[in-house]
Length: 97
Image (cartoon, rainbow, N blue to C red; front, side, top):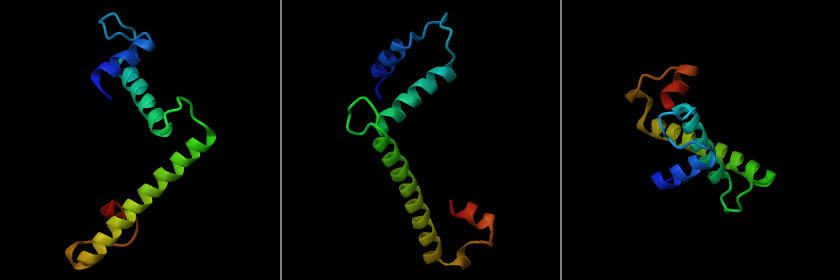
C-alpha cells in the first residue's frame, strides 16, 4: 500500500494525521491493517466479501501455514537429528517453527 493510498484511506475515516487528531497511532494502524486484510480476502476486487471469499481465505491461509510447517519438519529431518538438540514434546515443535 503506497503512502498516498494510506493517506486517502485514513482521510475516509476522518483521520488526517494532524496533531489535534483524536485517533491514536494504534487506531490508524488497526484501520490500515483491517483494510489490507479486506483486500487480501477480496482477491477478485469486488469491494465486498462473500462468505465463500472469507472461508476460502481461511482455508488457504491454514493450508499455507500447514505446508510451511511440513516443509520445516522435512528440512530438520533431512539434516538429521544429530545436528540439533531436539527433544519430544512442545519444545520440539517450538524449535521447528
